[in-house]
Amino acid sequence: MKRRFQDTLNWLDDNILFILATFLLLLIPLWPKIPLADLIPGYIVRLRLEDIIVFITFIIYLIWVWRGKISWKMPTWQLIFACIALGAMSILSGIFVLDTIPLEGMVHVSKSVLHWARYVEYFFLSFLFFSTLKTKKQFKIILTSILIVVSGVSIYGMGQKYLYWPLYSTMNREFSKGMRLYLTPHARVQSTFGGHYDFAAYLVLMLPLTLIIAWHAPKRWQKALAWLTHILGLWAIIASAARTSILAYFAAATILFTINIFANKELKLGAKIGRFIGQQFFYYCLVGLLIFNFGQDMIERFEQSLNSIEVLKVNYERFKAFRGQMTAMFHFEEIKPPENSVAVNIDSYGNNVAVNTQTADSNVLTPTDSRPTDNKPADVYVDVPDIKYRQNEKGEMEAYEATRTWSVNAEKYGLSMAIRFDTLWPNALRALARNPLLGSGYGTINKGDQLDLFTEADSTDNNYLRTLGETGLLGFFTFYGSIIFTLIVAIKQLKNPANRGLVRWYGYGFIAATIGILINALYIDVFAASKVAFSFWMLYGIFWASQKLEKQKADL
Image (cartoon, rainbow, N blue to C red; front, side, top):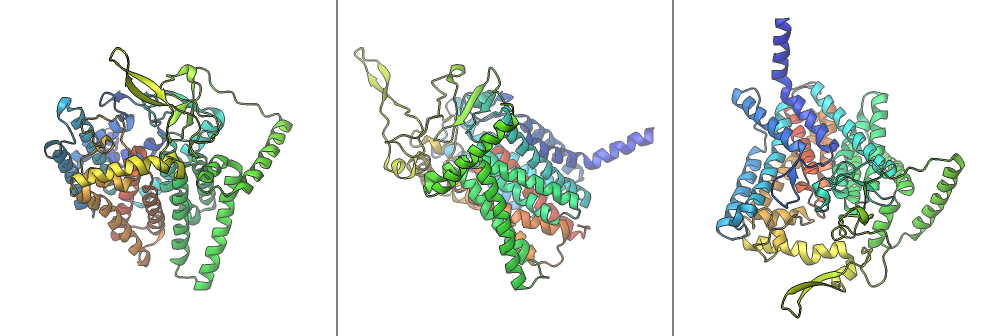
């Protein structure tokens, strides 16, 4: 008995970090963004369950490093450490040189340090997976976990879409406090994520991996399971209706098809071209079928940009009529929304807003079920007055509602793009101009020229401009330098005949996923969205672990 207990302790000693790493791989995407506590009063970023578990894992990891149980020097560790150091320097510069981070009340400093700590948290996961992934069996467990997670978040998204399963959003200040919500029929699916943009970006990362597993899994039942998972994920990214993410995924999928076929040394060029065309054709027929059945919201989103696919709308209306007839024939029971809940939709700004305002603060939550009307940008659905202030007869300032006016960019490109052109992106460039080397510091871009303003949320809707504005050219080149260097190594491995099996397949998927997320970063702050950032740096660490296993001639 004593011997068995000692053996169990020894096994835990060797495997506890891998267990925690796998648990985090499963927990972070699957657990909704339910806040546990405020970290900074009034700020949208809050303490969550995964933060506590990551912190506990970090402490154990440091102890194991001190004991010499694990190796931590990933090939890009210098770039990552430099990025962390430069981020700290940008905060110091913002406090003591630029005055972009005021010391009053320490709330501004706390917010900047919080953002810096979040990046440290993200980076840590890459070291965790690099250090703990040591065997072929563990590698298979990780790939299986990826299939479980993608299936889980996709099925939960279906539950939200059709069964009123709850969602917890961070795309609205009030909702981020943990308000329980449900989707209206035409709202965009976000599953367990804080918003539909984050959910779609996560799928951009994971769908290439499920596809490569579906192609190369050794057994039929494994292929079938991977294909089912992939199709569920395709439905989910279509239901998210996030245009940039969908285009980024299509680019990633095309790259994956190209690598998988043209890296095959056994096929002649003609056979490669034929297989490439044939596989692409059947795959995108599958995608088109899913869009036809479930992608009306996505089609309408693209119509705002293209306005040239009326025939799809007509055919979809015919399909909906047919589906309604089938539903009536089989007497499907209509699912009712839950009582005492808030219905949520997506407004033209991309934010979650409430539909049933009777149960929410009407000053914050606005109904958005109506269609666009004249004299507004194409993606504006309701007339929201502009709140302005004037001095009354008593000399006091009072608020009043004025007719909202729209910029030239809003009228030409829509409000979503105009916000980027008119405000977010110019603010980032101004932040970079203050200190081209180190930027203005974390969490300072949205202030504009009001340096003492405390912003409740921070985004730039372009991760490259955000990195430049917050940490300057030095932070930009170290952050993306580590990603590009890893991508180059992965591409070079395509020519290495020694790479085989899981290492080679994972390399294919990692290349496609990384390029996809880099495209996605042009329009969304994907590397600052916690669930997406956590997941990317996990995949990053898994890639370097696979390279380490290959060098050790592990049977992969």
